[in-house]
Image (cartoon, rainbow, N blue to C red):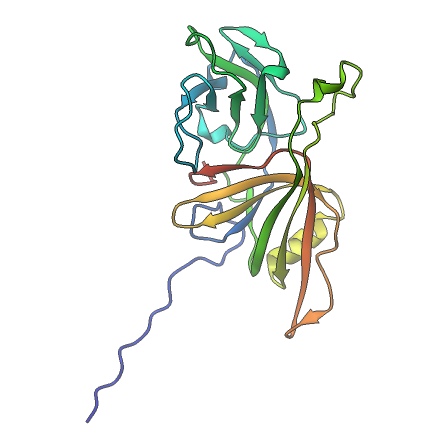
Length: 250
């Protein structure tokens, strides 16, 4: 008599949408935490030198790429102006590129000498520490980033440009989603806001994720597909996307 086949146990992955994403709860998430500002004189505004780009393998020259040291502040608010300081002296924005996702500063040329008192910044960050700060989106797939042009510093056209000018960088990000509680939450959030910050995971296990900032311009509800209400979410980028390789929740 043949023995019974071994039982198959499902992976114990949480499907609760209102939990901080730490690599096991979903592969797209919204950052909905409050914005807090911090000044460069605060010790928590310090930045640490990186020797390679997060998620990459290529070596980066010393004193060129920096990340905020306190990783609870790694998701910056792209809508708030940033001022960078080296040894307490402000640096013109023409000398660096700021990436709010990950809170990185990349100087176009490595600093000539290592900073004595360090690299700091005035910036604002979005909290990701509580159960309501991060909303995991269930039943999503096919996310993609579309950069339509290269970023060019805003001072290319002189000093008469609007302060909000972000260079010629343009692009969109999008993903497909199907009916779920988190989809309904997103639907109603769109009634009161257009600006969103999303985390698009490349790998849950490794916490490889792209942080994108943008305005959602499409309705997430469309005719039922395969018995489910679905839709494509499309956002227009307002900041350069960047990668983090660490848990989203601090």
